[in-house]
Image (tube, rainbow, N blue to C red):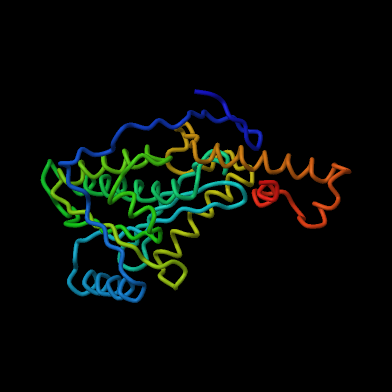
Length: 269
């Protein structure tokens, strides 16, 4: 574990670890649905109507991940009775440490953690009082949903491990889990609230707030291989551009190519 300094604040950091597989082939995946936009919105409206009119005990949690001002944030928003909002949010680090993809997965992980805590709070003397019969998570990231449905070994796999640890706990509480895609920025209040919350935690830390970071702020920041590779590529590209600008030869090539890129290299193949 190392120390990473940002905005004058030291925070613990460690590199991500990956394993051969997240789930054994025999373990059941959670139910995931990606419908066309109009169908997804119609399903969402039906779910809301059932919850309002039938006093359905299903729990609806909206999630999102965001990159803002060079920082990565994730959020999960649970809306009760149409207006009571419970928001969990987390700062995952800078763009050199994490990715928006990992933030989208982290939003789903926080939603499951919230469901576990809510179920425990609704138990009295070990007896169910008002535990949710189903947890419905709504994410606007198809990539994250597909990763949960078929977990492999991408950078950010550690979040998938956490997700399925939560899934096992929730299923042991006799609660079903459904993960659904919902279009972004189409006026769905829960989705807009999750988006704002994810941006807020990123902006809060980017602004130098020492008390920010949301849930898990006391945990080490996980540096992803994908983020590190991107940062290295960006630095190489930046150095290449500076050398390109300072070079006084190759003027004919400069008239053809404004900035160096892989296309520039192909001119010499």
